[in-house]
Length: 171
Image (cartoon, rainbow, N blue to C red):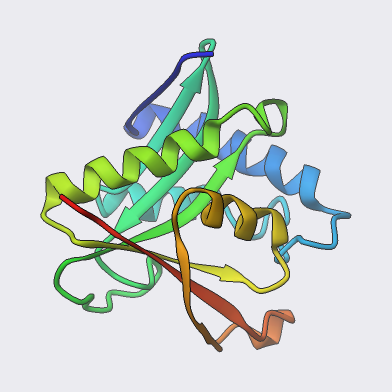
């Protein structure tokens, strides 16, 4: 299956919102769900934030929006925090349930490497909730290494610890 990744535009927001909702519905009863829920997080407003930061991308497969990923220079997409030079942060890796285990997440992660190099970054980073074992396996399979464990301020949602994963880029 060919997977095409492109920068999202405003007309893509409806599809990204539906993608987020379908992903939340799929994860609702899973033990690895980091409290994603339709109408909560992630939401259309989150996608709009990523789009406004010029960092929202969609993956298309067979004409469908199969996935989405967001990239920013800041560790928090929700707050305007300065990032470190040379680091590009990955946010909200979302794959539609109809496209799971078809290489969509890996294709998006490969794309982030190319985009990071294009932007002059030397390191990719992503935070993942310690209980999200499918995501952890995906990142490790794609060359990311655990670089730490942090409380990123989401304990009120039952998400006490997150692993920081990094991938050093060759250029």
